[in-house]
Image 1 (cartoon, rainbow, N blue to C red):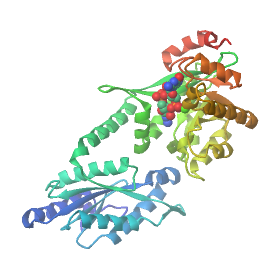
Image 2: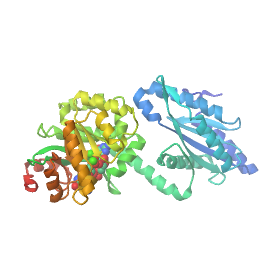
Image 3: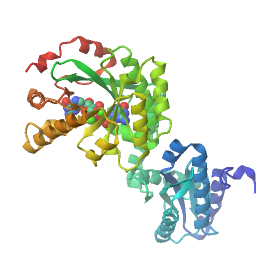
Image 4: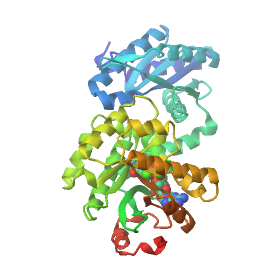
Length: 432
Ligand code: C2E
Ligand code: CA
Ligand code: CA
């Protein structure tokens, strides 16, 4: 067979060969009333292996995936590597959805034993999108686009699952994909902004730091919340670029701020799983002539889930390199107390829900009091987030909470407005 129709790494047919096969199979569908299916496959857990252990390890996985796929399909079916970690299967003359589901089950079973890369077992899952001929269309491009759309739905459902193309959802799926493409472009075109929110020492009102928060003003949709675009960036791997973009912005700001007011950045666990994270961070701060103590790293506890997550090792590296580490959203995630032991922390941030309810719910007040005491015992600083009322601030002061952040003190402001905040007397809210 023609080398132009093979993927060099895995030896599988490539996209061109896949399209040719589909064209023939679909012609038979039209002629004899057969059914066929196009399955679009994407690997779950491939990016982390590639990021952590390098491309050679990624290649090892791809070769093994190709083998398992070839062993799973029937002679009359066709499997191809489309590129990256995307594969496709065409099922010719397939009975219907029931047969397709049993094929999907076989595929999932084939992936249930771990793969091996970098000398370690690696769990890799499959997300699958399915389009059917003739019901979803009779030409290859239409089916591939629809299978890809269904795949996206499987991915956003959390992966490890399959979806049939569903015209009811196709439009929403397409909009989300467009938004992802827009986010990629926004990063490239420098259309993101950073907002900064001061953190004050409760006893003195002095600004002891600022948190850098990502902002995206979409040219058509207006401003999009980080709660929406950060998860999107995590899903697509854009978080690495976005994350470093924020770190640069934070360094630019920190360079003009007092040395005792570090800028905090939120770091996703996906970023911490990257093998180059510490080196990347050090390179950026050096570029700006800063020392690591000027950039604090906030890690969201709710995202650290596994026990011996490589993220924990990276957090230790960053701490050793001199970056202060804060545990964000404390109390909302899993195994909080365990992370207090495992992570090299300097600070915990009490989640805004606890701050809010501390003055109305006695049980919540008790939790906040205990967290402040616990932190003191462990030698950690504490910031209460989301402080909106004088009453909340007074309560926090009365229990000895060290620092506060929230609308009462200041909303997040633009880079340009930050110097004025430093000049302003924040004590006005803070007088006991
Ligand atoms: P977070 O780290 O908990 O950030 C604090 C959020 O609370 C911010 O929302 C902030 O604007 C908001 N906030 C501050 N003071 C108050 C208050 O008094 N009351 C209330 N109700 N809210 C307050 P924002 O900017 O929408 O960010 C949402 C989340 O998105 C952040 O939560 C953080 O987890 C994530 N995020 C933002 N920027 C980045 C980033 O650059 N990288 C990553 N990985 N995540 C980010
Ligand atoms: Ca934060
Ligand atoms: Ca938080």
